[in-house]
Amino acid sequence: MPTTPTSSPAHYLAGLPSPRRAELTTLHAAIRKAAPRLKPFMAYADMIGYGPYHYRYASGREGDAPIVALSSRAQYISLYVCGNRDGKYLAEAAAARLGKVSVGKACIRFKKLTDLNVPAALELVREAAVLIDREGGDFSL
Image 1 (tube, rainbow, N blue to C red):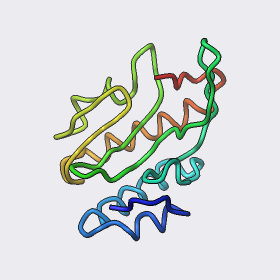
Image 2 (tube, helix red, strand yellow):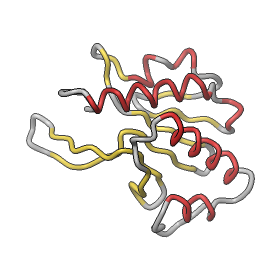
Image 3 (cartoon, rainbow, N blue to C red):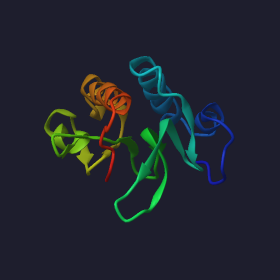
Image 4 (cartoon, rainbow, N blue to C red):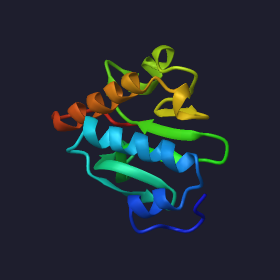
């Protein structure tokens, strides 16, 4: 797994060991196809972000974060899908239909790509992309 910051998503993916490289490359391509408007970028040293947005909390704290992100971790793959609909986090609300995964508020963790219900996950990616286009889309965590 890369331990230093990379300059691009392609460089990050190329630095992953096999078979993880193939799984993340496949999911990266699927995310790009599902939400082409969400441009990929290196969100952090070890995370591909898609479609940055600016957030501001009631406390005044603010910053920039990806709407969707993808990362290889030591024991699993993480797919982050930010956004709320009707007061529920998108990923958390869809947990039961995402496959053999562990789900937090916005994080979907799985050991291998075959554990993830990819069509259901891509539906969440598309929904997050639609939410960001709407005035007042809720992406707070």
